[in-house]
Length: 226
Image 1 (cartoon, rainbow, N blue to C red):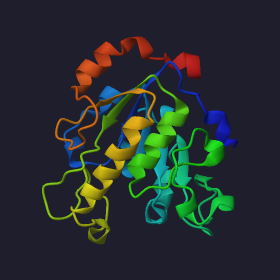
Image 2 (cartoon, rainbow, N blue to C red):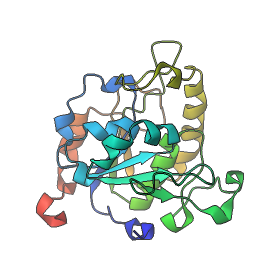
Image 3 (tube, one colour):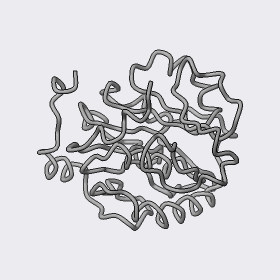
Image 4 (cartoon, rainbow, N blue to C red):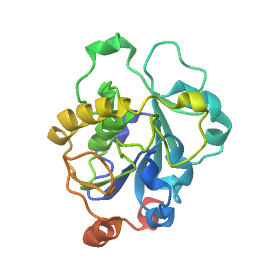
């Protein structure tokens, strides 16, 4: 596929960017039925309308571990490749990889088109925000981007990962600092943080029910994108 065809394809819509934070443990996923979503890693498996979801990962381990799940998943699957030579899963996911711009330290800027790939960041959440900005929804709701965890290691809303996949909780501070330093100055969508417990302080917080109600005019009926 030509990735640049995605540029601006969500104009006039509302969308959601979904991480893996523990605030989603009791989340009612049915609230996202028929919504346009970007879901990082395992969050994609919970989205009720995968045909309107983009699975996003930067983690090669994730593709190795959950390849069979992804093969059967019907939504668009994007892998932002962090190094050369990883092509084992090209039959399952679409690679975002600009080999003319290596090493990755030379491409750390926010991109305006998928022709230029995406920003290379410490957190996949920031790269996913760059993707959302390229798609250009009018409203963007953030879910599960907690940047907080109750224990000494990063926790998720699910128990799908091996124990050795959980980095120290201190890593979340680095992610938070990077997101707050970069994303608010580039995201063109009206961005709302829908996770009450999230430590991200750079966007207004609302309950998801309020967000759904106040942005109802930006819902696109399914038949319009069939």
